[in-house]
Length: 179
Length: 175
Image (cartoon, rainbow over all chains, first blue to last red; front, side, top):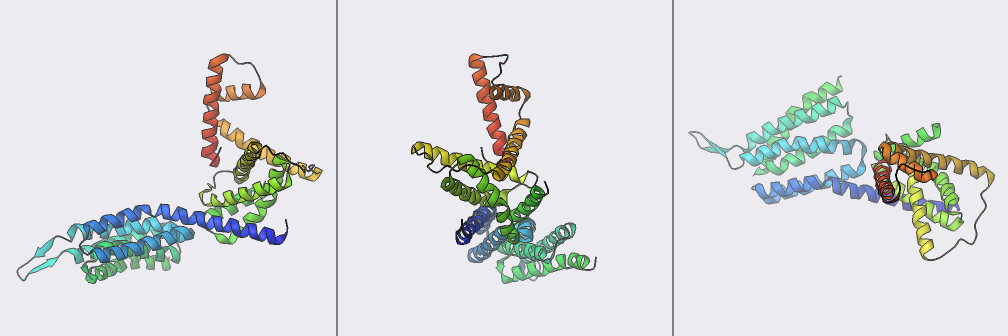
């Protein structure tokens, strides 16, 4: 077989390898699709939930397909993001009322969930002695997953989630950086 | 042995998504797969087709490769399956190879190594079977008399082959 023919075979084999990884990624991300559907049904702001959910699925699938650290970050990221998501969905219909008026519990729940998610990502990242790519991948997926629920009171919930997440993850990140 | 360890390490990296080792894995597998298919099919064009098909399947399944399993028997099992598929197709079309090539002496040594790897793979699969299945299979293979015969032996043999197939599939992903 001449080199041109061999190059053709190599390219074809590479294409099959990538396509197999794409199929695997799509299969692997299916549970997150189920979570997005459930969040969309239970959430109050469907369009925002679906937008964040779609983004989370695309990013997660891309991380699965790429492999290495991003692939290893998918499960911790989604599980960490699950905490603010569930808290936000549970509290989105609750309101805390005091003498001055009522306020939704969504923002505090998102902030608290964000802190827990941040701590979870930091804990996994430190335990695995993971690199920057893992931290970035897990954080982005945790934030996107959590944001599906935290869009309950508009973008204030998402900001609350982000602040909480930063508060949770930064100490762990600093410990990793100076270890 | 070092060559096999190297392939195992490279395949594990490819399974993890490290594309930088793609060419290295391809180069290390291409020649053994071609020689193995040639030794099985004894027909140059068919062997080339089967080897290409085998390489495609190997890389399709590379992401599922389990680093705890030996790489070469796994790859050769896929190639053997492709050769068998091609042989079956050829048999159905009642085709026979026209230009069978004689196996050169230096390639015979490599074919022997490949056969040894396949035998090891089969033995590994057999070692997971219960004692009675192993005895039945060995007696069948060596054409020896067993303590039972007739319908009982036939049933035992069927069960043993089924279990061997399951074990092989679990270890190497196909039968």
